[in-house]
Length: 441
Figure 1 (cartoon, rainbow, N blue to C red):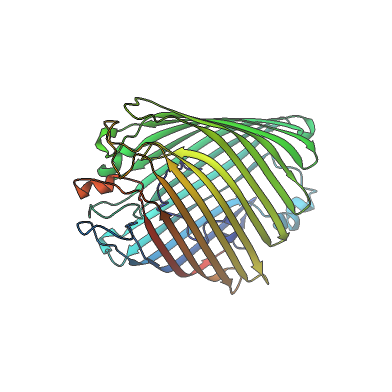
Figure 2 (cartoon, rainbow, N blue to C red):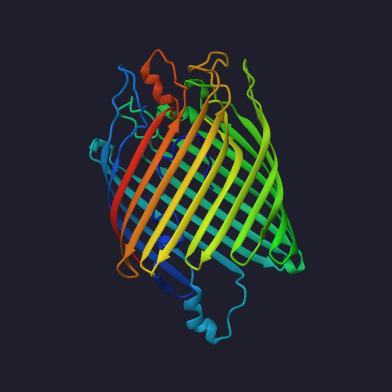
């Protein structure tokens, strides 16, 4: 997973790239591999391209909406599907044994043209790979790599020459040990992440992230186990943070949870976990920046039918932030997906959250930069994705998405050009609509 930041996701994957099961078609068999190429073209509308407030100040930039043209190509790859394996040589040879090596991955690129600002035309890209190696009956090795470049704006348009390009990369290694019969599993892992802004204006936010994880699962029923996970995350800003308009500090973040994960029935499973989270920040001057609180997660999955699934839950967690250094999130969420008559795919997602930030002050560590020292936001995100598939390789799709952030907090600056350096917008509403056609195989 890429490093999470308390700012709008400027490159949320379009509806058909958000879930691998939506993206791939029949596939092209190449030996033991399977390729899933595809290309799609969409026309969209964004009601608030730069996350402007609902009531912008007279001196501030005007709210901008825009039509958008997006062309996306992708190539997914992985092992051959089960049906094809059963029909092929592996079945004839008495195959079906557990694979010693498993993998899947993909690459994609999206070319954006913003009709309201043609000079902002740019390209996003992503790539990912997950590789698993079963070295022995008791040891597995897992390697992951995720890369992404986003170009969609994420704050007010006060600097017309800003590209808003941001690169995020996350590479990980995990070792999993298991007892005979997989009653006990122990995993330990390390992930290295980088978050890099290409524009000089935002480079005070460039950072490295190191994450160490230890987890255990003890299975006491066929499909139910006690789970534990402890994570230590080290956040290291590697550019001059004093160039920003708010204090950002290097930190060590600790999270530990224990719970139970299991299937209540063949179609219904639940995860319940709770624990402790704390954050420790370097060079604090003035207001206290440390964090300490309870963390929790509740998730239920209901497989209503083979092609119909409902997931819902609640989580309480904390993450790094470019204002206040951290934000705590209490969030309820739900996701529904179904395929009707093998032709029409419908996906609905919704989340409502409360975000509470640490003390938001200037780099001097003393001076508040907004109407209040601390900040609380209510965030609502909802999306609907629908696609009708004329064949198993051609489909027409539509996406509607709403993002709203509600808060009484407002930044107070003498020079409005400084607004761009606050990487977490305050009050805004944003609607997006997309209509497209894609060919996939």
